[in-house]
Image (cartoon, rainbow, N blue to C red):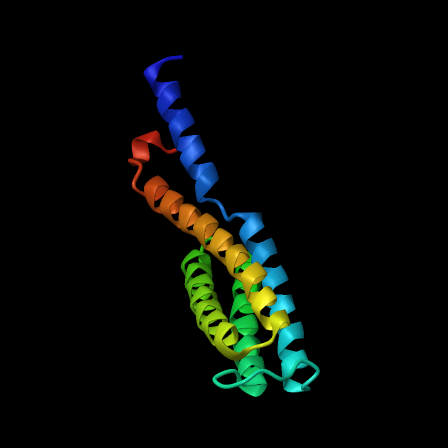
Length: 152
């Protein structure tokens, strides 16, 4: 393999990694839908109980907002993958922060179902965040490749 084809192979690999990651959208959609379900269960008091600082109404509202942000990110990733990279990363950071806050509140006063939910959802969100950060890094790296190395 000569140097030109080696550089093209590097460019091709960087371009492939810069494309959107369908796993990110799948995980974000799954967590978003599950957050909607949990939101309804909290707001209708099907899941209630616990002690302060846990509040099922506040939990349901927060879950609904986080779900909305995640599902909008999933839709944007589907419609415009290149333009939605940063938005999706921000949505995942927001969801992780909300889940960490939710976990801290449920551990001190929430129900076992809430604690278990956060213990499953948070690692999934962190996984999606890691994957989306890789996509964004690859996109930046591939955009910095000189035009002479870009494939036609």
